[in-house]
Image 1 (cartoon, one colour):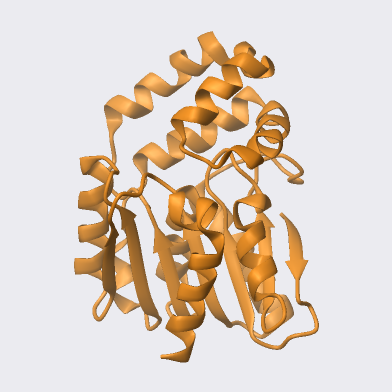
Image 2 (tube, helix red, strand yellow):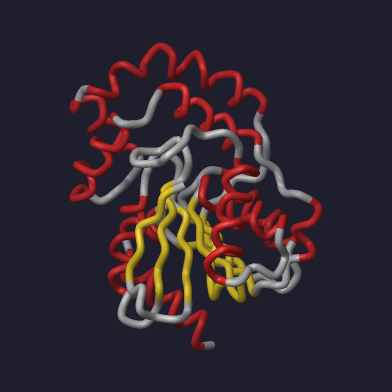
Length: 247
């Protein structure tokens, strides 16, 4: 796994795990807003553009990040955040190592497995993967994701760099992930965010996570779609992190 870092001279470490099909730029605005006070580390998840290995499982990605934290930061960091696939990996990290961070910020993480969705992914991407290389098709996909327009070039470049095998692998993993029982042992203060305009499965997932982690806080973001908080409102997301830490 590769890492992009900001504010390396600072002591308090924050990890932010990007969504599936995106990359470190998911959190670029957030990192730049926090870099004067915190050491921000943005892992490039396996199987994504600029990563150093294919995607295997959510569990393997979690274990890789835990090993990195053990090796470089003595086994714990200040805060870990994650969006969507990154949020699932964060939940897995907290399940594998209950005391790895003081604070955790989980945004739009699906924990309701869908066998039907899993079965649909391979044939769907098998038939349309080649279209990803065309800007007109990527613009249609990009528009449906509700991501701010100035990130299109990053999105197009990195989507084209993801292999069909990796894209199918992480989408399938995303569709089948469920919470481990050991999540109840998490000692971090956990904050859960979900967009008010997200689908029912994502809304229910947020409730399941909230109910499974004692003392967690859940906030529904009125008017927001999937991933909008950290991607489109990076400065607000950074301010929320400051608020969480200062309070």
